[in-house]
Amino acid sequence: MESMNDGCGIGVPASTLEEPEVVALVDPHLREGVALILSRWDGLQMAVQNQWGGHDSLQKSHQLADDILSWFSQSKGYVLIEV
Image 1 (tube, helix red, strand yellow):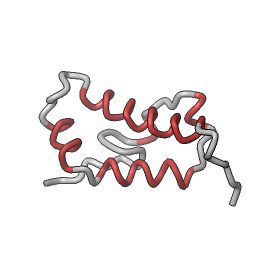
Image 2 (image 1 turned 45 degrees about the vertical axis):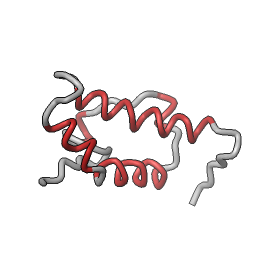
Image 3 (image 1 turned 45 degrees about the horizontal axis):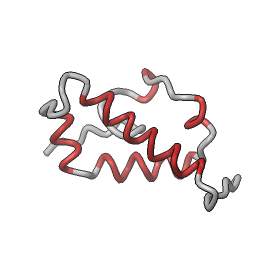
């Protein structure tokens, strides 16, 4: 199966994506980790490629990544550490 990794998770070049304001404040290492995990999730990749979520499957996969990042960034147990 071909990888559809775009640097943000899946699909299209990262430079063409607009990121929500809340997600933009997330540590880049966390963002990269979430993107890597989602890009290696074969079930998600197949769903996007075959549009099992409808014609906007790619957007839904990006929303999933954004929701995960948002959850971690808003969690009381998460501390943003600058490196």
